[in-house]
Image (cartoon, rainbow, N blue to C red; front, side, top):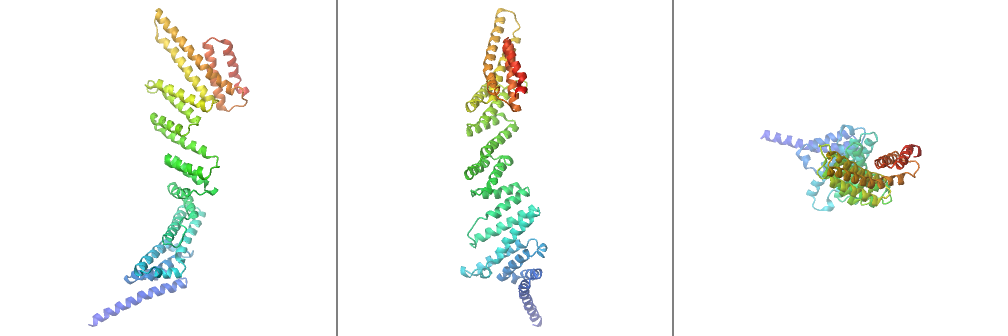
Length: 435
């Protein structure tokens, strides 16, 4: 009987110590002895009674929030705000389970004017700003994310009415970008862009997202989504057209690097259907088609070489329908036709005989080749008509003009028209002097 009574006395003594720990924690908090308060509340919550005490969880929330805001001790409890928010959630769960009357729920928090959760949010944000300013971007990112979690929790409980925290979301994205975590930066920048915020300071976010989805992710759909949003929100920004061209150019480059010509040509068709007035893509498509058509790296030209050349000419002529003074398109059409003439003339070497029919075949081929030379001349002379009268030319334009003159000279020499050959030789020699 005596031993049983002794055990009960010890049990009651233990309960008294637990309650005493909670009271001590409160006193230490009041006197700002925060680490002592932490030790006492942790000690109490380590007991069964403490786990069930609703008030204890609320005090843990207050104590840890206070630690997070005190620069003299916060380094000793680096996760103070996380612990505080977790304790607050436990407090609310237990309080709501114990009090079915909603008016009586979270009375302690209401009496404190929601100070702990406000401290958690503001503390996370301030820590984020501090870490950002000293270049600790990864830490700043974690802090700003913590602030957003706290704010989202406040909104979920109906304590605030504004759901979206624009400023913190912006800083979270910037911190992620500075920390070289572009995927996380995209997550937060996208949240802002999707709101269609029209303040000029958000312009670059749309452009950043276009670049991210185009260059990092090869995701044309999302790149175009944010390009479209950017155009909608900032219609007076003149850079969108150039950015759009950049998206498509990046996609084409990706297909070019893949080495699959069918995919590359399909992408050109796709781009041209989206940008029917973009003569540059039409011209480049014509170049790609022709270069592939005459490629003999495999030992011979592709089986559909003639069809590819015909398609190349079609694209170059479409280019000139959009931009009638595009000298490079005229030059390439002239080169293609000139090369056809050269290829025709070369076939005479395969006809070795001296029979009348052999002689006639060679003569007919030479006539056909001369016709091709005649067809090439208007394209090449058009280059002279466009660039010749101009003054100072860019290096690329000077090369175009020289290449055109060079072919015209060769054609007139082939046709034995000496005066024309001499005329264009002089023009060729004067390009650098005149232009």
